[in-house]
Length: 286
Image 1 (cartoon, rainbow, N blue to C red):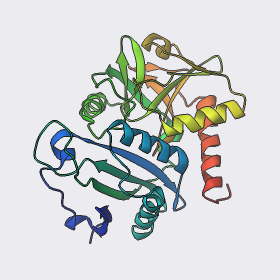
Image 2: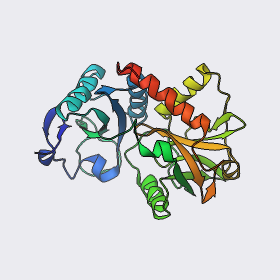
Image 3: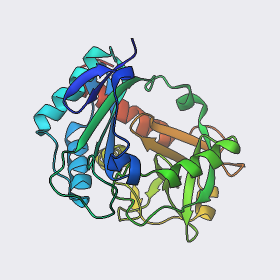
Image 4: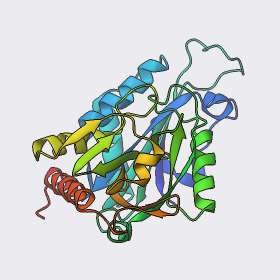
């Protein structure tokens, strides 16, 4: 028996889960997805996750496949059935099964799929060592604010970064960093966090949203603006954030040491604040 997954209103062993070759997610990448982190068997940041998922669905003219309450219950059930103490849940909704045609078909049922996974997040060794990043060209489409399942551009960029021995790729457009292949990007200069403002050019990261709120609450100076690769290389610190890394300090970009080559104090503080917040949500004393 493998892990239990969810597919179209049913829980089943992963070996039994089958999707039609005519599913528009398979043929066109016509669908959206989300990933939520799990700590102490608890889903974090539920409300911003639901808001972002709803926005992505609306942008593709897709309706919720079930009520939000049922959706959250499904996630909790996957966590329970798979014994996930720490990790995450991936879920996606595609337009459904129909003959191949570029236009949106009418009156078809969406395909809903989800699975959980275990992963050590809080005690990640990367939090202590820091990670290396390389810059890569941003070759993606123009609606990066939609969390689309069509991720070939990100896959190509991640592979390019991996071949250079980096943990992550920072995508660059017109000389400015947009975001990581699977994370949000930040630099720190003179104690100030600098990150790109929201637009169609980047995804509205949920961890980004929470971190900016925490920075404001703790009076850490913050500026939302474009920053260049040159600025990143000359930064005092850099870090990234995502659902299943929380916050990771960056110690090297394109082979150049950032700061003293060790995780910076702002990055460490942001990670500590987010973890404290997450543990409170999960009802765990730190």
